[in-house]
Length: 343
Image 1 (cartoon, one colour):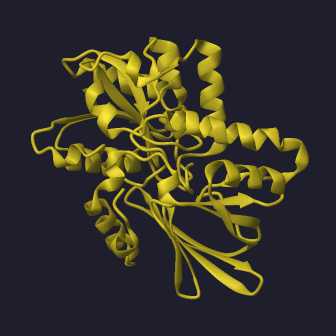
Image 2 (tube, rainbow, N blue to C red; image 1 turned 45 degrees about the vertical axis):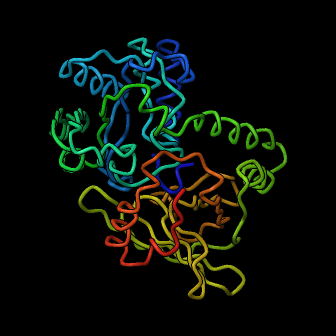
């Protein structure tokens, strides 16, 4: 569900395992919480390909503690900003250590490149004050940083993105406390359980080989395998807290191009648009069934190119904001809006 972003698998596994070893993180349905209780978002912000990235499990806890120390409401629940290898377990460590439950209503049911996209339309509320806390960086390299920002969604999100650059690529973030009633209307309700269900289908076929595992994901997610081929070219540059570039896959003498902005954003072949964000585009290693994020995909890999249409995903309200799609157009210099259907 990371769609090329969402964090590295090993880091997600490490974070999840550490959380369950330290305590008992709890996942709850949003209906359990009173409508006037407050929920905040936990996220990981930065560029996955940056070799200096360093976020430790305790950083997630400290980011939330710093947020709670700087706001006047009590936090009764934590939501992830999105689904992805690390993103899906955002909140587990905080829940295990601080006893605050994780709510199955992430800001978005798939990974996305900007904080605005996961803001659940708070950026459209002119009177909303965003509170964002960030922690990360390698102390041994002099890059460790803790930061807190208060202001508009756009301004604070830009500041946190800059903080991630100074930290070496990534920071753990806690942000945007809102009432549970707001999350109920704008979050991706049930998206964590959807990811768990897809993961179950994947592992149930582990004895049948990589292709069977990939097909199980596609069937469960109601997607399709667009192509099977070899990754022949990759251009990816890191700057301003993002990874931006292009991948090329050769399949039966046909070329497929994927545009990248942290996540896989556009899939084209022979001038034909095959998928457009927020459609989920994903690469799976045909030999190992490993999902390949954009930072990891390497030339020579044999891959399956997967598409899950946006209407099969559980998405937050930030994906219904056409202005967010205009931002993608500016970065990639390609049409998005004319392929984009309001959800």
